[in-house]
Length: 584
Image: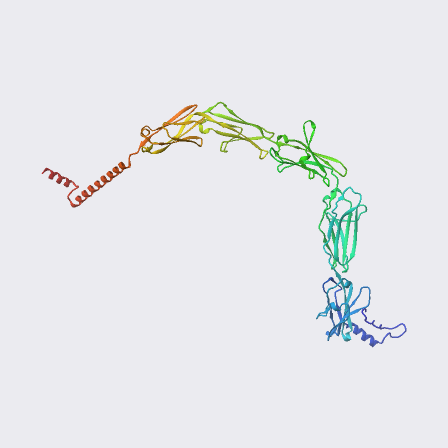
C-alpha cells in the first residue's frame, strides 16, 4: 500500500516445495488486514485562492476501538515523498515545521484547515492516515485544486477607424482578462456569432502573461477585414474558465467599431413634421449620404433655362442641411444636393421637389355694389386661388362665425347690420394655411333717433343733463334748440349727444328739441320738461291729508261710543224713535 505501509507477506505453497510462511502467521496477518480502519475523504476539493481550504477526514474502526493517532501528510504533484504536516493523538495535536505551519489548524473533528491558499497549493495531494493499534492503519487522500475567477473581460475597440476597402486584416479590438488561475480561454463574437481564425479574413492573437502574484492575464487581439455592412456590427469577447467541473463564462460589453467607406447613394429630402409645407414655414432640406466619413456637401436650386443657383452659402456643409426661412410660393422648385468624396474624388447627386402650398388672390365681391339702404339685400362672394382644395367661412366684426361657403347673403339691411365682414379661406389638407379678406357693408340713410331722455320734473335754475341717441350713415351731427354744453360720443353703433343746461323759464315752458341730420335727411324729437312744485306746498298737502284722517278717526270713535251707551240704535225701532222724536 502507498504511504509507507509494508507489503503483506505471501502465504501458500512455494514452487520450492515448502511454505512461503507459517500458517499461523498468515492467519494472523490476514485477520489483522481485514480489521484495519476505514478512512473516507472527497477525491477532489476546489478552493478559491485567498480563502481557507477545509480538508475533512472521517473514519471508522472495527469493534468500536479507539484510534491511536491521526496523521496528515501532503505530496507534491509528480512526487512520491510524503511530508508530514501534523499528528493527532489522545494527548493533543503536534504540528510539524513545514511551509504550512503558520497557515494550518486542526478542528475537533480532526479536519485540517489551511488558510490563505495560494497558487502553489494547487494540485497537491493531502493524505489522512488513521492508526488503531492492532487493527493497523487506514488512509485516504484528497486532491486540492486552487482557482481564481477571472475579472470580467475589458474590450477596447479600434478608435482610429477601419477602411472597408483595405485588403489587409486590421485590428478590430483588444480583449483583456486579468487575475485568473488557471489561465482561461477567450472567444470572439460578431453579432452573437463566434469568430474563428480564417486565412486572409480573420486572425486572433493571444498573449498569456503570468503576473508576480502567480495569477494570469490573458490579452486577445482580433484582426479582420471589414465591409460597409460592418458599420452596424457589434463585437464582444467571452472568457471561458473551469469551476467545480463545469465550464463558466463572462462576457464583455458589446462594442461597435468605426468603419470608413465611400459614398454610394445620396438622398435629398424635405424634413418636416407633417410632410407638408406652407407659406411662412421654415423648411429644412437634409442631404443623406451613405459614406463614412460624410462627404463635402453642396446645394443648388434650378432656375429658368435649366440653370442652377448655388445655395451652398446658406447651408451647413458639414451636416448636409440647407435651411430655408419664411418660404413663399416662389420658394417652390427643384433642389439638388451634390457630394464630393475626398478619398476617391467621386461625385454623387440627389434631387427633391419642394412644393410650397399657398393661398393667394383672396377677393370679396359685393352685389349690388351701389350704396345700400335700410331694407335692401346684398350678396357677398369670396374667391381665392390655391393648388389645394379650399374651404370658406364668414365671420362678423366680433369674430363670430355667421356662415359657411364662399357666399354670404344679407337681407333686410338695417343700420345695425352695418359691419365689417371677413371671408376666411382655409386649406383643408394643409393645417395652418389660411388667408382672410375684409369688406365693409355700410347701410346709408337719414338719421334715426333711437333713444331720448324721458319727460323730466325740473325746477327753475337747476342744472340738468339731456341725452339724445341716433344711428345713421354717413355719420350725423346733433343740434339742440337751446344753448348749453354738449358732449358727443359713440356707444356701440349709436352716436350720442349729451347736453348740460341750466333750466330757465322759457326752457321750462317750451322744452328742448334734439335735431339730428346728415346728407340724407333730418330727424328730430322733443323732450318735455315738467315744473316741479316747491317743497312747502307739498308739506301743506301732506298736513291737510293727515288732519282729515284724524277728523274721520275722531268721528268714528264718537259714533262707536254712543252706540255702546244705547244713545244710538241701529235697528228699525231705533229709526222709528228717531222719527217720532223728530215729529214731536
